Image 1 (cartoon, one colour):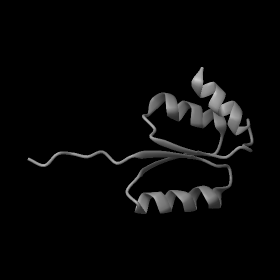
Image 2 (image 1 turned 120 degrees about the horizontal axis):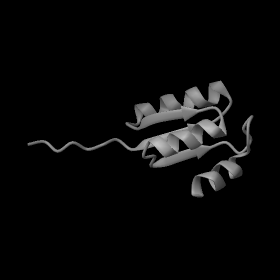
Image 3 (image 1 turned 60 degrees about the vertical axis):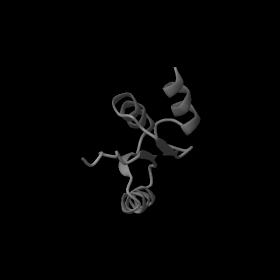
Length: 75
């Protein structure tokens, strides 16, 4: 019987569409499951709803800065 290995999940939080899409494509090709968000509040909701193994987080987002996102996730 073959065991099912889950792909690591990466969350890319970046408001620049080109950068976010490029990073998503790179990590998809490497075998990651990719979630992406362009706002800090969306990233916080993704982390509440999904198990995320790695997060790439832009520090300058339109609705809040990346450090505020991290603080909110740890509360």
